Image 1 (cartoon, rainbow, N blue to C red):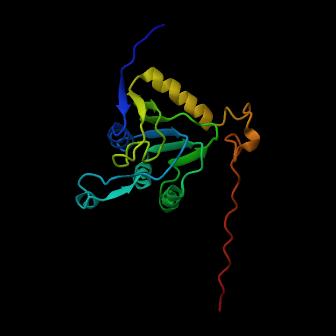
Image 2: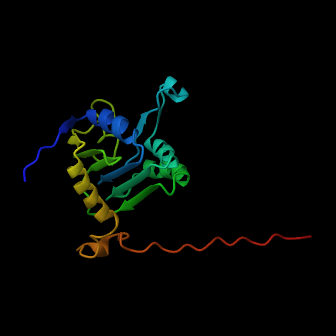
Image 3: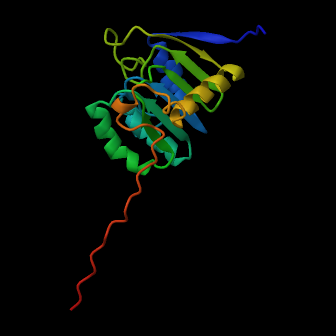
Length: 202
């Protein structure tokens, strides 16, 4: 059955305005992101903040941490190892964001998706990096192209596909499983409680 869907094309720097500022940072319940590469990204501080008055840019992870603390579910599905600066920022901000902020790695992920609140969907070429999402300056941004839609059928189908990968439902039939750093269908390792030495008396 043929159907129509309303879509908006997103070019270059429009990724920053439409996706970073207008979609990710405005999410109220959930943000699901799929990307091949993950790198640190800086964005303008919130309007009305002292940092914004000073023209300061802040880490996207600082904002995601604050969103997670408000209960926004953030899923980041990625293929490659995150960059060094991203890992450094994650080490600084992630402990405050659990359990609402989660990352999972699958080497076969090459799709680029941003789904926010089950209401907005981006499909395109941009990875979750400053150069990909238009946060870099003129002459340093990638040439990217994608589409933004609120179509419920596309949202449902895309999020179902994302969730199947996220839950490890594709792992059993994966032909590169032996090369995977940690298949997503592998149960999480149990962690032992840290032993606390008894206090000395006397």
